[in-house]
Length: 413
Image 1 (cartoon, helix red, strand yellow):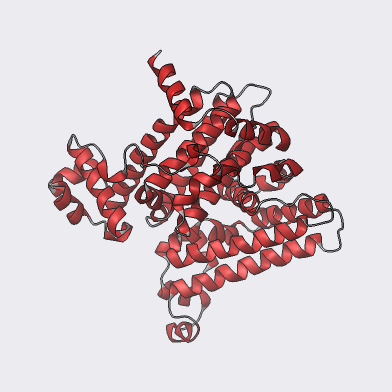
Image 2 (cartoon, helix red, strand yellow):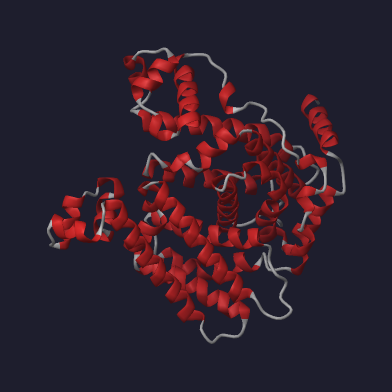
């Protein structure tokens, strides 16, 4: 399974090919597995167990928490760098193997979160909020996945120390001041999205097709997307559809790009019109959280259904994280600007936390997570204490209506 997935991708693997590569009959294959998905999950579990054992072995007997963290990160980086085929199955192809595989991945992440929290636990250490721990694991996964997708897995060996520095930036006792912050004032209450998925503006033929794909996918999931159904709902011919898209998957990804672009466009002014960079980052993140909470159909598409089309969607996700990381860095003062590495790791961390909320059916609670998400974005650039100061200052200042009025005045000017 590992070999075939590395060579051709999960979707191209068949039981016939697996049996032939393993030198067993198909009858023998079915003695052990119900099908290729069960075989894939068994391979995935084996890879994860080896990774966990490697981390435990690397940090065993070490008393200093910083050194435990460093050794654990170096162990994971080394495993990915030296066994990219197995790492690709667990970090990339898992998204193509269906909802069951993605659910298994979420449970695996919880194991690594528990291990990380245990490695950081010692007398006098400020306990990190669970969402920050979740973000660190998600950020590390993002870095490893990006190296695999770019074809440079061995770069992770060199990334080890920078990854360590990034993770350590969150280990500050001031993080405790964020507890409960997101539930203390009206600005973060859920409101309807400015332009919910179901009200996409219609115009030319391509827009009609995209709107139809969005409605179908939001109501019935990606599996419901077929070219005939999209054409019927959009009121266009197949010839017209073919003139714009190379199938349902291509249409779905185009829909995601359109919707995500509009979502970012709605949030960006809150970033650009703030008095300082850190405040702008927090306001943009808070706005994105509110938008996702107010438009759960889009949240499901962007964070759950996105994996259904396969490798192309994983690549879209990676490109989206890189785009958000570039936005994070763009307006930062030189002395506060995070490195490209840190920015992408932080956006990956935020993406992982948001995915957790959406996958567990708690999109409506995302606004309350905005302070922690902002901390994940700001701490590597400002330091933990300064990041908390910037976020807390936002909650001690203007109410949301005042912020919106300030935004409107700036846009008018």
